[in-house]
Every structure is written in structure tokens, then in C-alpha cells.
Image (cartoon, rainbow over all chains, first blue to last red; front, side, top):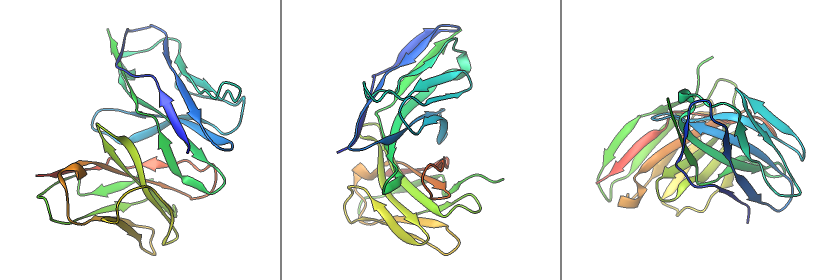
Length: 114
Length: 113
């Protein structure tokens, strides 16, 4: 079946540091890929997405590129802020018949210290 | 416009009871998906409803059921509650077509004692 694997946390870094969260996927077919963020006590918010190979999603300084050859969708941000402290989830969805079904990775907690 | 709302936000039940959770999607959205979030299993897909029909289903026992009304509001029901059902239950709504974004509600925190 389809699955998503992302690096374990917590990831602790100082303000203005560079952030990378690794995400790889296994899928039969061509999934769309997503990064969601969850702040404490809240639901999930879509951070960015990519729907086909070589697409780059970007939002709020975060970027991720859909790499079909390495089945990866790593999240990066050049300079993190304390407000970026949250749990980040990589997810996939299959376009063909189950778009409404998101499959998530385990989540990576990011802690940014001043 | 108003976001996805879920009621109640918090719920405490005892084993063996049943519970109904409600989700009101964003106006105009026809798809509602439900997810269970636990520390051990992470985020798991329960089911999706689109235009009052279950379109996708995850790997949960039959104790978990749902429905969707003509106004797209959705409910999920868990019967014969077990301790392991304690979780944050999230619903998400979308227009329901391919590539449409899913918008999540704040969740219902269910505690089973």
C-alpha cells in the first residue's frame, strides 16, 4: 500500500537556523504531496503542496520539491523563527479515486529557541 | 468565510458508551473526511463522505460509522467505546474534486475512561 515516512523529531534549532525535514513516500501511481503544520491545540493547516513531479511548493518561506526519482518531498526553510515551532506532517493523496483520503507520516516536532 | 467547525470540542465518556461527533464544513464544500489522531498511531484516515455517500473508507472496525446530511454537515459515531478510542478526531472539508485543498477543523478531543 501507499505510505509516507518522515524523519523523527524533535528537531531543535536556534532562531535563524536552516531547517530540513526529510520525507519519502511509497505509492502505486502518481500521488500529490503535501506538508501540513499543526500548532499546539489546533487542527492542521496546509503549508504547501505539489501535484506532479518536479513541482515546487512554497509558502511562508517554506519550500519542498516533488522528486519522483528519489520519491521524496523534503521540507526546507532558510531561516526559522520561534513562531515556526510546531509539528509538521508530510502527506500524500492519490488523484485517481481517493483524493479525499490523506495518508500522513508520523509527524516531526520542530522546536525553535530564541 | 467561516472555517470548519466541530462540536463538541471536548468529550469524556466511559467504556461501553457510544458517542456522536459533529462536523460543519465550509459553506459550499461537499466533501467531509474524518481522521483519528493518537500519539501511538498518528493520523489515520477514517472515512470520507461526498454528497451524502461514503466515498472512501479506512481500516477501522465497524464500531466507527458516519453519515452526511444534505447540507453537507457530517457526523461520526463510535459505539461500544474502548479505552483505545481516546484520541483527537479531526474532520476536514473540501470541494471534493481532485486537487482541491482539505481544510481542517480544530478537532474533538475524546477521552474514554
